[in-house]
Image (cartoon, rainbow, N blue to C red):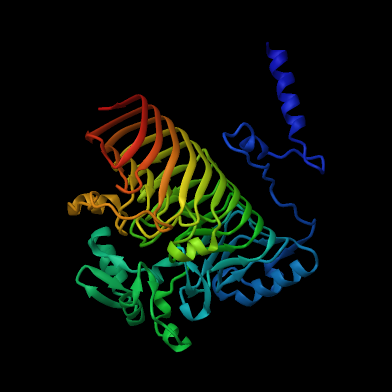
Length: 489
């Protein structure tokens, strides 16, 4: 028997050989999936090494290294690419833009610390929360690049405390005093903004996206409000983020948008629990992605799948598809694994397995609302462990209004899930979802399914589920909820 197992292992390794004769450690993640998905390989780089210190950068924590990073990346990419070494030290910088065939490699003890000076980050046209808009340039970004990576054993810090608003209820009295003493303004006694411009931007915004601004001067007047995602990767192909710490982002932490062949491997992605819009990962309209062995400790959703919002998302028309999430851990935050609420381009062919959610508001969270449109289907979830879930182990809510599930529970709000409206392109649809082998201890409520009367949540398959919860499950506007060995006590 042992000889047979060794033979089978050898055969499996041989089948994993890549074109250059090396094994592909990621091939096993795309074997035997319940949907077709091509093999995903890590990008390869030329055997060429540059060192950021050779370009005048100093890792002393105070010298600004923006120009050094730009020059080194430009030259490395122009010569065919390779590895840009960031040695031990604190490398203080403005925005860094990655280019094709460049691997930004942080050695052990290296910290890239982004400046909190918003004037270093130009206002650019981009997408945020699924809408076409303008934001400040992200601290770390790439647009249209092929074969890019961030690797090593160092950390990338977005200095988000200089950008984010703060709710008094989310921090201790001493932390509230420390952060608000840096200046800024109060919208209310319990809500602080880092500048007058931020307050103005907030008054013009619909869900964090300003409305009605026409001139560059008007956008400049709310620059602080336009806090960016920390890592923005747009229209990129063959992306690897591996082994690095990403922390303290101004808004979302990591945001691949319309990218293809993406690997996130063994990352620690963290934000303070009070970080407003501090999502760990927002994978939006991407194709062929692996999220493996990563840890997320976020102030908002941990691992979130998106595809654009409302008319902008439907016009883009790019679903998030062919995604494997395996061996990940999520602490705190609003949700462990999340779909939506921006899913107007559709979400399909997602496998989530072997994950643990510890102290999140919700374990598995599906959210949307009227106006989105889009179809979420072919989602497969298995082998999930949860503990101390503050709200629901599993939530489907088609009445999302911007609040966390805990905030909705505490407010006592009830959605009007009786009135029926006509079905059209703006009606979101959630169907064909398979959840099995889930154990959750200490949830507030076990299951909460809240669909639309005109388009019920349909064909949700629950198998081998064991949840201990304080409150019973609730099902509204659902069709075809199949339960096999489901225990909620």
